[in-house]
Image (cartoon, rainbow, N blue to C red; front, side, top):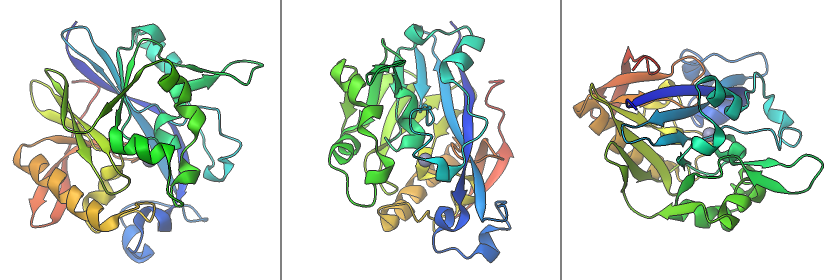
Length: 281
Ligand SMILES: [Zn+2]
């Protein structure tokens, strides 16, 4: 199998623009990200599919799934896709997936890890043969959430994966395979995994909610959802200085308009440069 990467858009939702850009005034952020009459910004939920030379099939993030749409209807989800159907279009069955990387465990990233059995209170894992990679401190935070994050965590999104012995926790940088390494970042929440995928022409960085939108490239443009904003600021600079130096491509998991770009800048000022077409890589 030839190494390849592909983005799967699993659906969209609306997030409040004020919440997405924190202390940044609307007069500034509205020039860089559209919103509707209710101040709602359309956000994508992206999953990254990686196939490797040695036969691994790796997913990063899974979108929100469908279990909690009623409880979360404030977010006005739309165009939701079933991730397994999307994989099927690419000739991949659920049982073929060898690894699921979860950047973190907020509902919009791990909702499809489990599915509710029809006419039952029970949940089953969507990818029964996959190792599920989670940051150890993120897992501990998920089990004992702080007051601000607990509404973003649903125990039933992960319990069946843990019970099946599929959970793999990392507490430091880990090589998943020769061309995929998992790094850890704090800020938005603790112990976020950011996968680095080394392709022949460049390295791709799935930035998760460390840098969710191209407009979030400015280090001080930090979401009000971030639990440790001062840490977010320095973590973004850490990620972006390397991205500039190494000419890496940054994938924005929530940007409905810009999927992936290279980055330029220095001394804390960063801008998206070339649009990179991920799927044709
Ligand atoms: Zn998110």
